[in-house]
Image (cartoon, rainbow, N blue to C red; front, side):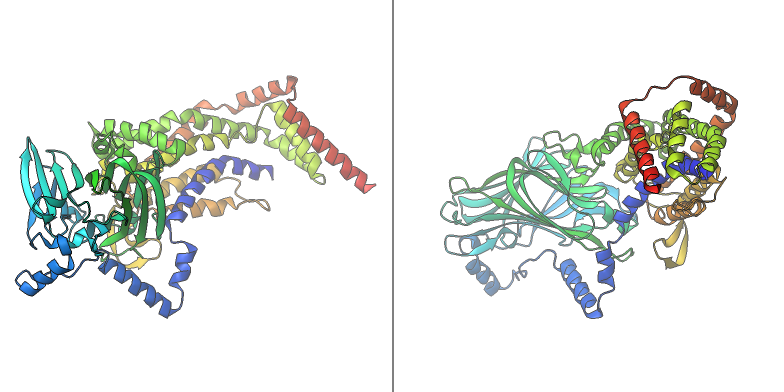
Length: 618
């Protein structure tokens, strides 16, 4: 029976770590409510699908386009927009570009209708677009003194493109007179993803109704860029800086709504790319909405999420004046940390607490250093080796604890037989034996807890590491996505329609590791987990759940478990000496042991319970 207890101690560290994996994987799977919705009545399902299609098709609502050749339509436009009909309708666009990003700004709405990143492409070699074909809109919703409700995305602006040194300056003006207008001013710098964006008015005091709120409305429907849309969708979310520097994200699973105060920036993060609206003076409030558009893994899905922000804008002296910035670019910490004024690198979620700190300040810069002179896959292998070697003292402590427990096994078994009818006395005597021998039965768990921050940080490192994107290694053509070695003619639930090799190798390595640590004395005692079942289940679950995850993560687990097996063999065969451990334990038994307050209290409680038990039998 005590032999089984030894098995528990030897595997408990792995169980704790794997339990954390399962928790995170479980959180990323559809919720019970979502599963229940899938099984609801057919009429409800069809209604939900119809609503979802409506969201996808009409994420950006715009007024019907004007036929510029139709004088009646143009006259109606002028009539409907009152004073803001001064600017003549035009379907022209203006281009702003540097070596990094290409923008196309429309006269209608004065807004960006195309944002393309020049140095990146998607998994299927298409240029990375953050805005294209009407998936985004930006506008101010306001009322006028003659009781009209207008939105700037439906108004026409007059463009003027100039140079300011090396910078391109585009002024877009929606005029009510030659010297009275609402202006969007874009200033693009060379080799920079950040574009200065100013919203201001001139001479509109009395034209715009200052007694009614002005709402800044920014909507964007995330365009798919990755091979696995479900995997990309897990890391597609709204990040924001609010409440005097608080950084948080909205749920990436399902729909979510938040109202924040004192907002510095809003990021529509699409895994490895992001669209950010930042303000030089914080927005007082912002209402944010995130709607999930992905129901299942599919090659046909084009969009991931629908994001919306509604922000009240205050007028000063009857005029509008907002100094903003647009960022359309990679969610790469090396790029984002250049914008210290806003702290845009916080838009990348590295993990919470100490886990995020380790990921951000240890693993990310360390891997960046290694990959600066090593191939990206080799850099992962080297980093894994160094991490495992750094943790080897902790591993040694774990195996030393197991060895001590193994030496004590005959005496523990003897106590079990002697007090088989008195569980309380058996526990008392067992604890006394542990105390005399200087052995803690919980010491095997401590290394697992010490390794958990390292494990979780690395688990978050691979999804956030832009450096891995589209970097190949061996048969994997993209370390930030799954490595497919075979395409299946059908789909396996929870697995997918392809076979990834790195998860298979990682699962095999975990299986052999568990065979070496739990392969002996497999029978389980009542109330305890079946170790043989766990030994087969865990590698199988690793195989299923990691089939669609980043191949770099599976590569790490494969190499990490191989190294752990090697370290374990070295420790057992060349470092630990059971005879010396036994002799040390015997020496410890001879030394008088002083009880601390906790031990004394526990002993007194157990003795009191024993006395009460005896009294009850009389």
